Image (cartoon, rainbow over all chains, first blue to last red; front, side):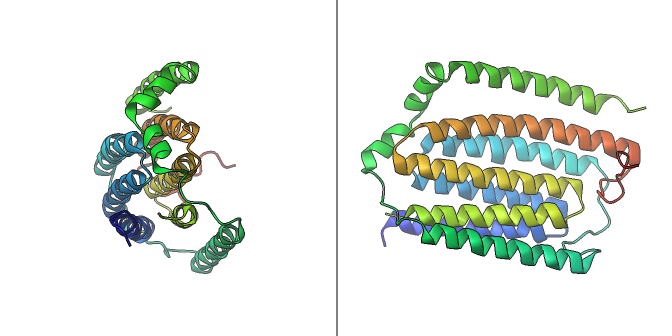
Length: 170
Length: 100
């Protein structure tokens, strides 16, 4: 059991616990904070995959920007009267959870019954592809058009968000 | 070395948790957060396979997914605020203006 495996299992356990808290906690604020914990530990999981750039972007964009947006909106709107996971339609929700667990068992069965994985194809290859340099090079050459398109999309989304949040509907 | 299956187990678990959250929770914001959870589980699968196959495309897809998720969060939360202004609630059972 080397350090890498220990780190992976610790981060995985934290993200599993946090994702359960997101869904099951009654207060939206606690859900949002658990989601931040989940995203941060996912960044750690990305690091065990040698995806450095993605890990940093995960912390900055997800755990930083998006979750701040969520927390602002939670603070802006009235706190709901308590709506836990089993609030109302209880048989239906228990059925949902059962079906979800069955689907999870099926997914695990499929993953297990697949061809046994080989481990990393030599660490050096994986270490190389995760760097900022390599990803930036790809974005500026082979993926230039999608990169520009995503910039346009973000511009349109920010304008749309401002317009939607500013005025009242009729 | 950690086998790639373990990443897939984590990803499958997070995805199912997100699905259960979307179907059972009735607070629009929590539903939204569950959707983010599902997006992240897909991202984890992409990065795991990208790293294990030594192919950079998966990580680029994750980059684009993150940008789209940021746009989606901005617009979605703006819609939630607009609905809250109108109906004074974010309970999805009471928001039925598109039903007839």
